[in-house]
Image (cartoon, rainbow, N blue to C red; front, side, top):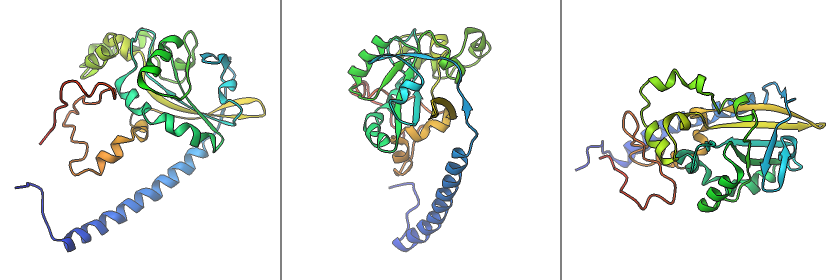
Amino acid sequence: MTEHKVGTREEWLDARQDLLEREKELTRRNDELARRRRELPWVRVDKDYRFETDDGAKTLAELFDGRSQLVVYHFMFGPEYTAGCPVCSSAADTFSGAVEHLKARDVTFGCVSRAPLERLRAYKERMGWRFPWASSLGTDFNFDYGVSHTKEQLAPVLTADLGPVPELAAACGTDSAGYMAEGPGLSAFALSDGAVYHTYSTYARGLEVLLGFYPLLDRAPKGRNEGVPPEVWIRRHDEYEGPDIPHRS
C-alpha cells in the first residue's frame, strides 16, 4: 500500500490547478530574469587568450566561428585529470544536439578545459560527443572566469569536510586538490566591431538548467530522491552498467 496521499480525480484536478498557477508565476519570473540577464552591462575583453582546437590555435574572437555570440561551458577537466568530471559529462550528453540549433540563432557553443587537447579528443571520442572543445592550457582564461583555482586559494578549503569530493576525484584519476582546482561554469560573450565582450557567467546551481535529466526527475513521482545530504549517483553514461545505483524507497 502506498504511503503517499491518495485522492479522487476531482481532488487531483483542484490541487493541480493550484500548482499550475504557481508554475505560471515561475515562468513569468523566469522571463523577467532572462530580460534582466540580457540587460547586464558588457565588459570588453582585452586580454589575448589563445586556445588549442581541432582546427589549430585560435583567439577568443576566432572561437566565435563567424557568429556574433559565443557560449562557453567550462568543463571540469584539469591538466591532472585522466577523465572528465562525471557531473560535467552528464550535462555534456545534451550539448551535441544543441549545437546546430544554437547556430541557427547566431550562437556558437563549445566547451573549454585546461587539459591538453589530445586528452580532450580521446575523451570526446569515448563519450561519442560532437561539440567543439578547446584547450586553454597555459592561459589565464579559466582563472580569469572563476573556474580554476591556485593551490593557495584551495588551501583553506582542503582542511574542511570534502563530502563526495574524494570519490569524484578518484573517478577523474586525480586527488581532491587536483579535482577542486577546477570548477564548472557557463560564460557568454558577444563580438561587436571586432571587439569581444563578456556578457554573463553562472556557476553552481545556476548550471542545473544544463542537466536535462533533473527537470524530468523533478516531474517524476519521487523527484530527485537523492537524500540529505545528496548521494553521489551520477555516472558517465557508459558506466551505468557497473554496480547498481542505490534506489531510495
